[in-house]
Image 1 (cartoon, rainbow, N blue to C red):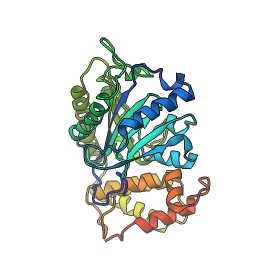
Image 2 (cartoon, one colour):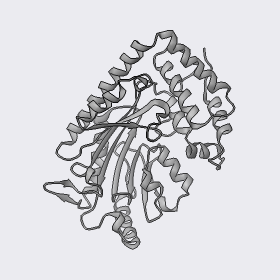
Image 3 (tube, helix red, strand yellow):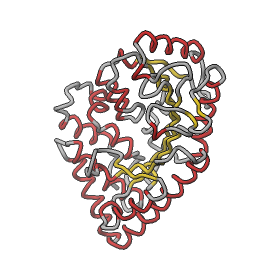
Image 4 (tube, rainbow, N blue to C red):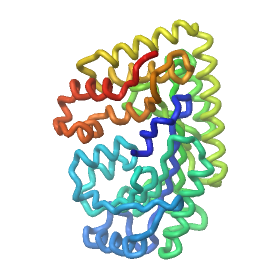
Length: 340
């Protein structure tokens, strides 16, 4: 079971959290300037110290050579939020330490030498930060990081310098994102150095009505301040989501939308990613408010992730990611408990 698939996780406004630390070693150029030989040397040195480690939570983890994986496997890891676009397309030497549930990982030779990441369906940022910093300290015991007294940890992108810390919280905002005040609220939180972007989809696409709230500033603020700021402004948006749904929609309207979404998902024979995300979002909203009841637990966010093309292709073993509509519909139908 991957980190996002726990069936006992609820369907509240707070969906998931991620904490990520970026580090580079002092005596090596950034990955995009390293030769393949130097990259192999650095990976070997890191593996010499890190092989056999367990995560701070006591889990064993495995090492994968990303540059030797298929494009489909790497795209699935990207959809699972384990690696970013750079690593999913990397053909030069690169690697990944990853726990069995994919929740704890250390990526090697992406944009930077090291990227430590912890993912969880529980938005317990202090706990995630504690896991991250323990891994960071363990690596730093053996390797000297590139650090500047004024600019902090040096990274390939100047926007990550300072703490090298990115904190993000995924929120489900189906009603707030449909309201006229949404863009105003996004601009307001941006004044505090916090961004809001689509968790699925690019640009104006709001697939699943899921949004990632994340810190934009890493320089001039402490790690503890970043963690507290992201949680505070995510909570502010969550309050506005509750207000938006109560002001614009009656309970019976919300229940009706959730029930219709369930019907579409239960009886559809073809589902695009867009259609699946839209219906799953409406279903999740109804379940979160307990307006409808199913015969068993359902983690809708996990279902959303597994509806993405590469993730679904690996689940169904249909490797033609351009023709998954029927498989997606069948997969969703099989996962849905009965409506009571």
